[in-house]
Image (tube, rainbow, N blue to C red; front, side):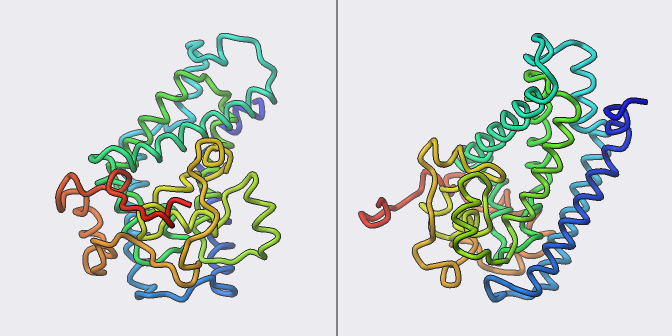
Length: 287
Protein backbone atom coordinates (compact mmCIF):
# COMPACT_ATOMS: atom_id res chain seq x y z
CA UNK A 1 0.00 0.00 0.00
CA UNK A 2 1.38 3.42 -0.98
CA UNK A 3 1.37 6.26 1.52
CA UNK A 4 -1.24 8.08 -0.57
CA UNK A 5 -3.56 5.08 -0.36
CA UNK A 6 -2.95 5.00 3.39
CA UNK A 7 -3.94 8.67 3.64
CA UNK A 8 -7.12 7.99 1.65
CA UNK A 9 -8.11 5.05 3.85
CA UNK A 10 -7.42 6.90 7.10
CA UNK A 11 -8.61 10.36 6.06
CA UNK A 12 -11.42 10.52 8.64
CA UNK A 13 -9.11 9.51 11.50
CA UNK A 14 -6.45 12.01 10.37
CA UNK A 15 -8.94 14.86 10.28
CA UNK A 16 -10.49 13.90 13.61
CA UNK A 17 -7.06 13.67 15.24
CA UNK A 18 -6.05 17.13 14.06
CA UNK A 19 -9.44 18.56 15.04
CA UNK A 20 -9.25 17.22 18.59
CA UNK A 21 -5.60 18.24 18.96
CA UNK A 22 -6.05 21.83 17.73
CA UNK A 23 -9.34 22.17 19.61
CA UNK A 24 -7.66 21.12 22.85
CA UNK A 25 -4.78 23.55 22.32
CA UNK A 26 -7.15 26.44 21.62
CA UNK A 27 -9.35 25.66 24.63
CA UNK A 28 -6.30 25.67 26.90
CA UNK A 29 -4.98 28.89 25.32
CA UNK A 30 -8.35 30.62 25.75
CA UNK A 31 -8.42 29.60 29.41
CA UNK A 32 -4.88 30.81 30.10
CA UNK A 33 -4.89 34.04 28.08
CA UNK A 34 -8.34 35.19 26.90
CA UNK A 35 -8.51 38.23 24.63
CA UNK A 36 -12.01 39.31 25.69
CA UNK A 37 -14.32 38.70 28.65
CA UNK A 38 -17.42 36.58 27.96
CA UNK A 39 -20.73 38.41 27.63
CA UNK A 40 -23.07 35.40 27.88
CA UNK A 41 -22.91 32.01 29.54
CA UNK A 42 -20.01 30.01 28.15
CA UNK A 43 -21.73 26.76 29.08
CA UNK A 44 -24.89 27.74 27.17
CA UNK A 45 -22.94 28.68 24.07
CA UNK A 46 -20.67 25.66 24.10
CA UNK A 47 -23.44 23.10 24.61
CA UNK A 48 -25.42 24.53 21.71
CA UNK A 49 -22.51 25.38 19.39
CA UNK A 50 -21.01 21.92 19.83
CA UNK A 51 -24.46 20.39 19.42
CA UNK A 52 -24.76 22.11 16.03
CA UNK A 53 -21.26 20.95 15.06
CA UNK A 54 -22.06 17.31 15.91
CA UNK A 55 -25.40 17.53 14.06
CA UNK A 56 -23.65 18.86 10.95
CA UNK A 57 -20.98 16.14 11.11
CA UNK A 58 -23.65 13.44 11.35
CA UNK A 59 -25.67 14.85 8.42
CA UNK A 60 -22.55 15.22 6.24
CA UNK A 61 -21.44 11.64 6.87
CA UNK A 62 -24.97 10.41 6.26
CA UNK A 63 -25.44 12.25 2.93
CA UNK A 64 -21.83 12.33 1.68
CA UNK A 65 -20.02 9.30 3.10
CA UNK A 66 -17.16 9.60 0.59
CA UNK A 67 -16.58 13.27 1.48
CA UNK A 68 -14.26 15.54 -0.49
CA UNK A 69 -11.38 13.05 -0.47
CA UNK A 70 -13.56 10.41 -2.12
CA UNK A 71 -14.56 12.86 -4.85
CA UNK A 72 -10.88 13.69 -5.44
CA UNK A 73 -10.03 9.99 -5.80
CA UNK A 74 -12.95 9.49 -8.18
CA UNK A 75 -11.98 12.54 -10.30
CA UNK A 76 -8.43 11.19 -10.53
CA UNK A 77 -9.71 7.81 -11.74
CA UNK A 78 -11.88 9.52 -14.36
CA UNK A 79 -9.08 11.86 -15.43
CA UNK A 80 -11.26 14.89 -14.71
CA UNK A 81 -9.96 18.29 -13.71
CA UNK A 82 -7.24 20.62 -14.93
CA UNK A 83 -4.46 19.03 -12.91
CA UNK A 84 -5.37 15.60 -14.27
CA UNK A 85 -5.07 16.85 -17.85
CA UNK A 86 -1.52 18.11 -17.55
CA UNK A 87 1.65 16.53 -16.20
CA UNK A 88 2.54 18.52 -13.10
CA UNK A 89 4.93 17.20 -10.50
CA UNK A 90 3.44 16.23 -7.17
CA UNK A 91 4.66 19.03 -4.88
CA UNK A 92 3.66 21.95 -7.17
CA UNK A 93 0.30 20.24 -7.82
CA UNK A 94 -0.37 20.00 -4.09
CA UNK A 95 0.65 23.63 -3.48
CA UNK A 96 -1.43 24.93 -6.39
CA UNK A 97 -4.41 22.88 -5.26
CA UNK A 98 -4.34 24.14 -1.67
CA UNK A 99 -4.00 27.77 -2.81
CA UNK A 100 -6.75 27.43 -5.43
CA UNK A 101 -9.18 25.78 -3.01
CA UNK A 102 -8.47 28.48 -0.43
CA UNK A 103 -9.37 31.13 -3.01
CA UNK A 104 -12.64 29.34 -3.79
CA UNK A 105 -13.49 29.31 -0.07
CA UNK A 106 -12.80 33.06 0.05
CA UNK A 107 -15.10 33.69 -2.94
CA UNK A 108 -17.74 31.46 -1.37
CA UNK A 109 -17.54 33.45 1.86
CA UNK A 110 -18.05 36.73 -0.01
CA UNK A 111 -21.04 35.18 -1.82
CA UNK A 112 -22.61 34.19 1.50
CA UNK A 113 -22.50 37.86 2.51
CA UNK A 114 -23.56 39.31 -0.87
CA UNK A 115 -26.52 37.09 -1.84
CA UNK A 116 -29.60 37.59 0.39
CA UNK A 117 -30.72 33.96 0.65
CA UNK A 118 -27.16 32.83 1.41
CA UNK A 119 -26.69 35.55 4.01
CA UNK A 120 -29.80 34.25 5.80
CA UNK A 121 -27.93 30.97 6.28
CA UNK A 122 -24.56 32.51 7.07
CA UNK A 123 -25.89 34.86 9.73
CA UNK A 124 -26.13 31.83 12.05
CA UNK A 125 -22.33 31.98 12.14
CA UNK A 126 -22.28 35.74 12.76
CA UNK A 127 -25.09 35.83 15.32
CA UNK A 128 -22.92 34.23 18.01
CA UNK A 129 -22.79 36.80 20.82
CA UNK A 130 -19.26 35.84 21.81
CA UNK A 131 -16.24 34.78 19.80
CA UNK A 132 -14.18 31.71 20.58
CA UNK A 133 -12.96 28.40 19.16
CA UNK A 134 -16.50 26.98 18.91
CA UNK A 135 -17.59 29.88 16.68
CA UNK A 136 -15.19 28.60 14.02
CA UNK A 137 -17.41 25.63 13.19
CA UNK A 138 -20.82 27.11 14.03
CA UNK A 139 -22.65 27.07 10.68
CA UNK A 140 -26.21 26.26 9.71
CA UNK A 141 -26.64 22.70 8.41
CA UNK A 142 -27.88 23.89 5.01
CA UNK A 143 -24.83 26.14 4.63
CA UNK A 144 -22.57 23.20 5.45
CA UNK A 145 -24.27 21.09 2.78
CA UNK A 146 -24.02 23.86 0.16
CA UNK A 147 -20.37 24.39 1.05
CA UNK A 148 -19.68 20.70 0.53
CA UNK A 149 -21.34 20.77 -2.90
CA UNK A 150 -19.23 23.80 -3.88
CA UNK A 151 -16.16 21.93 -2.69
CA UNK A 152 -17.13 18.87 -4.77
CA UNK A 153 -17.56 21.03 -7.89
CA UNK A 154 -14.18 22.68 -7.27
CA UNK A 155 -12.46 19.31 -6.93
CA UNK A 156 -14.03 17.95 -10.13
CA UNK A 157 -12.95 21.05 -12.09
CA UNK A 158 -9.50 21.32 -10.54
CA UNK A 159 -8.53 17.65 -10.20
CA UNK A 160 -6.30 18.05 -7.11
CA UNK A 161 -4.23 15.18 -5.71
CA UNK A 162 -6.00 13.32 -2.92
CA UNK A 163 -3.28 14.32 -0.47
CA UNK A 164 -3.84 18.00 -1.33
CA UNK A 165 -7.51 17.68 -0.40
CA UNK A 166 -6.63 16.09 2.95
CA UNK A 167 -4.06 18.83 3.62
CA UNK A 168 -6.56 21.52 2.69
CA UNK A 169 -9.32 20.06 4.87
CA UNK A 170 -6.96 19.82 7.85
CA UNK A 171 -5.64 23.36 7.28
CA UNK A 172 -9.11 24.85 6.85
CA UNK A 173 -10.34 23.20 10.03
CA UNK A 174 -7.24 24.13 12.03
CA UNK A 175 -7.05 27.74 10.88
CA UNK A 176 -10.79 28.26 11.45
CA UNK A 177 -10.35 27.20 15.08
CA UNK A 178 -7.18 29.29 15.41
CA UNK A 179 -8.52 32.52 13.94
CA UNK A 180 -11.78 32.28 15.86
CA UNK A 181 -9.90 31.78 19.11
CA UNK A 182 -10.47 34.17 22.00
CA UNK A 183 -6.72 34.56 22.30
CA UNK A 184 -4.19 37.36 21.97
CA UNK A 185 -0.93 37.21 20.07
CA UNK A 186 1.96 39.63 20.70
CA UNK A 187 1.39 42.62 18.41
CA UNK A 188 4.67 42.13 16.53
CA UNK A 189 3.97 38.44 15.89
CA UNK A 190 0.43 39.25 14.78
CA UNK A 191 1.73 41.80 12.24
CA UNK A 192 4.19 39.28 10.80
CA UNK A 193 1.77 36.34 10.67
CA UNK A 194 -1.04 38.23 8.99
CA UNK A 195 1.00 38.81 5.87
CA UNK A 196 0.26 35.15 5.15
CA UNK A 197 -2.04 33.66 7.79
CA UNK A 198 -5.34 34.98 9.12
CA UNK A 199 -4.87 35.71 12.83
CA UNK A 200 -7.54 35.90 15.56
CA UNK A 201 -7.33 39.71 15.71
CA UNK A 202 -7.66 39.96 11.94
CA UNK A 203 -10.70 37.73 11.66
CA UNK A 204 -12.41 39.04 14.80
CA UNK A 205 -12.99 42.30 12.91
CA UNK A 206 -15.19 40.30 10.53
CA UNK A 207 -17.52 39.41 13.43
CA UNK A 208 -18.22 43.02 14.41
CA UNK A 209 -21.82 44.25 14.52
CA UNK A 210 -20.71 47.14 12.31
CA UNK A 211 -21.57 46.27 8.71
CA UNK A 212 -18.48 47.76 7.09
CA UNK A 213 -16.28 45.77 9.49
CA UNK A 214 -18.31 42.57 9.06
CA UNK A 215 -17.85 42.91 5.31
CA UNK A 216 -14.06 42.80 5.51
CA UNK A 217 -11.42 40.16 6.26
CA UNK A 218 -13.28 37.26 4.62
CA UNK A 219 -10.28 34.91 4.63
CA UNK A 220 -10.09 31.84 6.84
CA UNK A 221 -6.57 30.72 5.99
CA UNK A 222 -4.54 32.94 3.62
CA UNK A 223 -4.73 36.73 3.94
CA UNK A 224 -3.72 37.42 0.33
CA UNK A 225 -7.23 37.55 -1.14
CA UNK A 226 -8.47 40.30 1.20
CA UNK A 227 -5.38 42.37 0.51
CA UNK A 228 -5.59 41.79 -3.24
CA UNK A 229 -9.32 42.57 -3.59
CA UNK A 230 -9.46 45.49 -1.15
CA UNK A 231 -11.45 43.86 1.66
CA UNK A 232 -8.67 43.95 4.25
CA UNK A 233 -9.26 45.96 7.43
CA UNK A 234 -6.51 46.05 10.01
CA UNK A 235 -8.39 46.77 13.26
CA UNK A 236 -11.94 47.43 14.53
CA UNK A 237 -12.72 51.06 15.34
CA UNK A 238 -13.74 50.29 18.93
CA UNK A 239 -10.72 48.08 19.60
CA UNK A 240 -10.84 44.35 20.24
CA UNK A 241 -11.96 44.65 23.86
CA UNK A 242 -14.53 47.35 23.08
CA UNK A 243 -16.07 46.03 19.85
CA UNK A 244 -19.45 44.30 19.91
CA UNK A 245 -19.65 40.80 18.44
CA UNK A 246 -22.69 39.57 16.52
CA UNK A 247 -25.51 41.15 14.51
CA UNK A 248 -27.35 44.31 15.62
CA UNK A 249 -30.78 42.82 14.98
CA UNK A 250 -30.27 39.50 16.78
CA UNK A 251 -29.18 39.93 20.41
CA UNK A 252 -31.46 37.54 22.32
CA UNK A 253 -29.42 34.58 23.63
CA UNK A 254 -32.60 32.46 23.65
CA UNK A 255 -32.64 32.74 19.86
CA UNK A 256 -29.01 32.99 18.74
CA UNK A 257 -27.32 30.79 21.34
CA UNK A 258 -29.75 27.86 21.50
CA UNK A 259 -29.77 25.10 18.91
CA UNK A 260 -33.47 25.37 17.92
CA UNK A 261 -33.07 29.13 17.45
CA UNK A 262 -29.90 28.69 15.38
CA UNK A 263 -31.65 26.22 13.08
CA UNK A 264 -34.66 28.55 12.73
CA UNK A 265 -32.69 31.80 12.28
CA UNK A 266 -32.43 31.67 8.44
CA UNK A 267 -36.23 31.65 8.22
CA UNK A 268 -36.80 34.66 10.49
CA UNK A 269 -37.18 38.25 9.28
CA UNK A 270 -37.13 40.02 5.94
CA UNK A 271 -35.08 38.64 3.07
CA UNK A 272 -33.75 42.17 2.41
CA UNK A 273 -32.06 42.31 5.80
CA UNK A 274 -28.61 41.13 4.77
CA UNK A 275 -25.27 42.69 5.49
CA UNK A 276 -23.18 43.52 2.47
CA UNK A 277 -25.70 45.72 0.65
CA UNK A 278 -27.16 47.32 3.79
CA UNK A 279 -24.08 49.28 4.82
CA UNK A 280 -24.44 52.84 6.08
CA UNK A 281 -20.90 54.13 6.01
CA UNK A 282 -19.99 57.56 7.24
CA UNK A 283 -17.05 59.47 5.82
CA UNK A 284 -14.83 58.27 8.65
CA UNK A 285 -15.85 54.66 8.06
CA UNK A 286 -14.60 54.73 4.49
CA UNK A 287 -11.07 55.61 5.47
